Length: 174
Image (tube, rainbow, N blue to C red; front, side):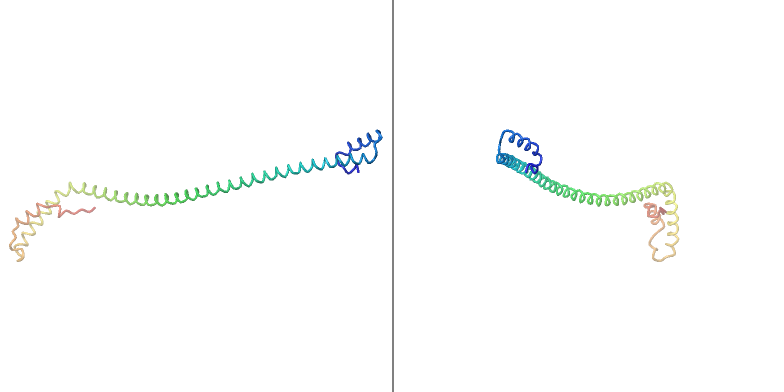
């Protein structure tokens, strides 16, 4: 029986040897061994209970941590969704603005071409317009004498009309 007690067998044997030397009976030895075995079992039960309690606390802590991480994950996922939607909105707005910028740039370029053309032709058109007005007036005077519909108009009227608004007869190649 002493050999089945495990780590306390050395102590049990020395206790048995001491009892035998003291004149104790075998029955007393068995009672002493049983008492030690019961004490060891109780100690082991308490240790196992404490281990189970630590394990349960650890599991509870892990469950709480998992719940916290799930909530945090849901929060981060929601924030990511908002950010992604915001990014899509900003990308769409950016595309619209780029299109508008390209359109405005093309319009500005066209307006600059028109202004350059007007500036280039303004100096040469003054002389050209006067020449065109004189030519038209002369042609109108010649036509007025031969055309019955223009019989009431004289050459001076045509000349005044053409000289008063020469820009009507300007040719602008731009």
